[in-house]
Image 1 (tube, rainbow, N blue to C red):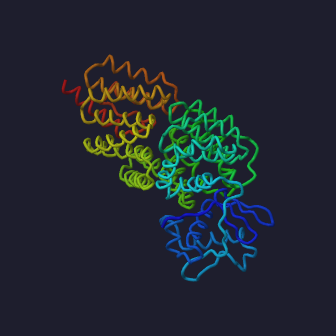
Image 2: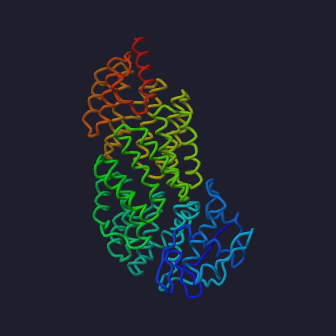
Image 3: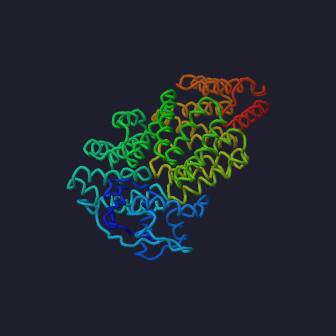
Length: 518
């Protein structure tokens, strides 16, 4: 069912801005959630006719498995408090018992003074993070050139909205929009909600291009400290700070990250925002992994999955499933990891997110390699690298090349592994991804061992100590080096379990076999 709606509707004396997520009535203003706006949009598409419960489940919740029949009734109750003159005697949002709901008396209009392009951009932006992401991306791609030619003729606040929609779309598909243009638009718009979104989009783009320091500066310079005063601004502000949390966790600033995570969780609870609460799970899990606590990481992700299922946030849900699959793999629970990663890959395919799907495929390739299915692992990686390269995802491509090098090692092809790992390390050094660069050096050392060049192997192992990192990573490096010094010795019981430990043990056995053969 295709849903076409105006940017605003009037219900008696009440004005509902579907794109701006605001309801204006005689008593003042209230905010709409994106789910409530989507519900009204689907009812509007019925032109006053009854829309069935089944149709609402499909178009609003995308038949999500955790949605129950009471979901629409609860949402309708909240909506009536916002749009009806009297909740006990509704005149606009009516229930047809046993069938569904219908919306009557709605007059379609454009929000006052808003250019048509901006209304379309708002509607498409609302679909980018939900089940309609694929079709929304296609429409934005078709309109991108026209919008870029239009922005100079619009007031700064409306131009900012067009650029925000383009900036959010570029997270999935890179075109020609410079991040600095988004930042300039953020500085000119008085709309704080739009400003937060623009800065978040700009930071995401420069981080993907390998400049985490600039991404941090964008976020820290432009996220205001004064508390949000509406739910819509609170949501935009919180999601921009989630990206800041990810950056702090990734760049090793763990103390700041933990403080920000605590503040974000308080923020999410205060604004009754389960999606934001669920989004904190992934960076919190990364912080737990950094200190070697995989059980805590798994629990954070499980909690996040519960919140994101309730919030119907498929993209963030897929990321949590992916993260939990990798944690289970690192714990040695391969049978549990596989369905989680397969479910995450299915979500990314459904949502038409090629770069994200490439990342998940990297995890699936690890499972195949552990089971000895090296050809299958390499085929999955070949497809994933193509997706990452086509989407200009250099960070993802570099990590996938490390996985390819590891698979070559497990298959006994040290020369091919060395070529792949050198390319990966070069990319990661450019992107300042020190942790993964260290991992590339470790496997370059293993490849040198397999070729019988112990001098080069030791040089690579020593290099792993030079890159900055936290204590859990350095302990893993020490354990790895001790294992390679004496491949027949067991892993010291007082050392933390290395990440991807089953892979490390397989490689160790392979090295031992080569030593015996020589």
